[in-house]
Image 1: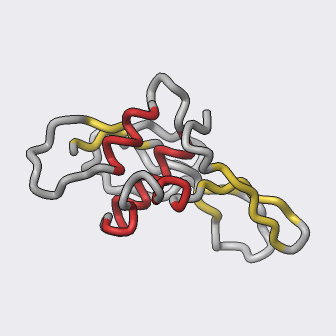
Image 2: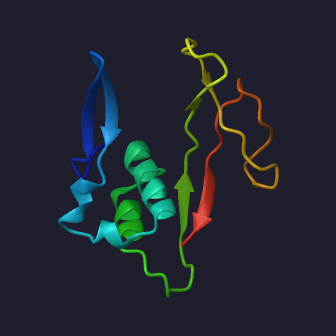
Length: 121
């Protein structure tokens, strides 16, 4: 899904990459005021919006984040693969290492599928 028309294409070196632009939300929501960490989470929601586990309402909720409000809602976060920097010419993907204290983390194996986690806002 692409409820906010945020999906775009970035062409670098003749290759196209799918990206999600936070600027697509700026005209309705003051995204610029959000802390950098929440901008990352917001991009994650845009990327994984499917209408079921991540909805347009989840994206709106985070875009309207109030730092003074009591946490009242859990929002799903999907971990994404990160490029392995071990081999410069390698195109393999590796899952980012996360603290073992994270509830959804059952290991840090690069072959393991990412597990969604929730964060309360």
